[in-house]
Image (cartoon, one colour):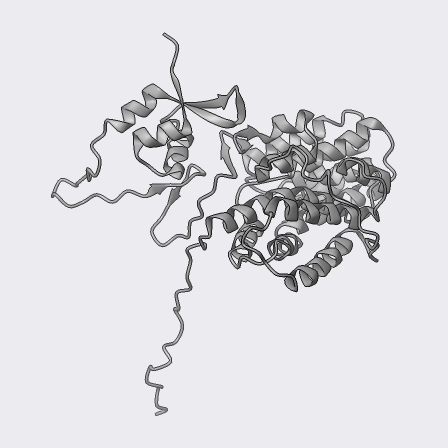
Length: 405
């Protein structure tokens, strides 16, 4: 007998739980789910699984052998557990399951096969239109000095100043505001130009002409659109809780990305690829770094399965990459026994396409901006603040000072 599938609304009604609890059941494989064929952005849930869980007596508390209540850690959407005192953020934006990263229920790697960055951004923001960028007009004053990263930060600083002076209305269109920010970010990198798709604008500015290579830029943007929660996304959520212009959380995310721990990984991988090409012997250089106790850029310890999958997808989309670059990848995998991460994948693509310095990190930041804005919009729409507080563990100001003997 075929399974019966019900809507999210019906599942929540039968279970009498919050949406995040339903998603937790799905992430722990306690309820089967699939995409709604009539509405791909929505999901359907297996009725038999829902009924099985709904038959459990509400409010029943598990107890120890001595009769005391047994406290269990609550499951988080990521599949881990939320421990007592740990800050938690509820989200419907994305989840990572079995090594795949899903945005609004869609596998990011699958989206990268066919979708433009504009469509993925619209999906992340739950836009009413498939292309919220269509009505936007170009700004004439988009020329900023410096490299790609500096241009983006300059543009965001200007928008921050402009939008901070404008009146924030309750009925503001967050989707249009997000689209205008993304549009100006790309214009700041490309110095404006024709209203092409975003990856085509980058290709035109960076003199990438081969259609296969142009498509690599599209794929890189989509694969970078969102990741699991990290410091940059957390900075975005906290900044968005102020309910100010979207430029505030976006500049918080991009600035945090430039740190050594995040974007610095891409910069180190880019420098490593340049060193190898100058040295001419990837094996000798890699061994020298490892013997000194350094990590091999792009092969950081314990990369997340979803990052490895995305990195591999990006590299496999460039079979025409030069053998010298492919050798860097093979040597790193052989010596470390680890899979490649997005940092090296972007660095290799950057050298393959002969992109400007810092372009791989900027490309990653441009892609992630779509996901950051989705988190910022969600934070503003829920109106909740991330539940976290400082706990002082220093010297008590009222403690008696020691007396010298």
